[in-house]
Length: 103
Image (cartoon, rainbow, N blue to C red; front, side, top):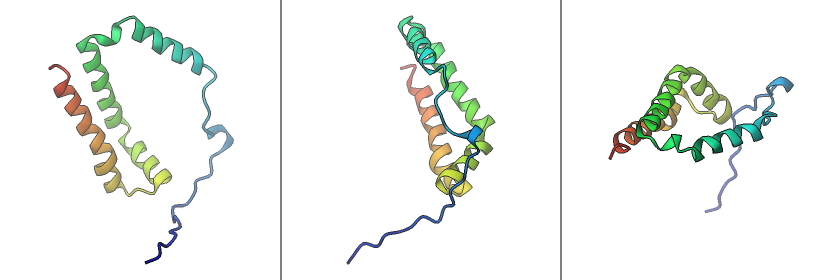
């Protein structure tokens, strides 16, 4: 049986020049700041890690509609599939990390 080439039916979304993806000019400074924070030992504390995971949970909850729209636009995922396979999966992983981290 020969394999058939499947063409995507997801429309490409043109971005305005102001929306083009590019690295911020301050990216090297951001990376340096993140490395400094790691080297300082600040990221080792359990309460710091749990706060970061909780922050990710809040960000997902606060921006769920935008995440669903991005998954639809970029990957053609229907909302239910995006929620179950992407957003729900990340939420489950965050909950597991928060549960396992204190051990």
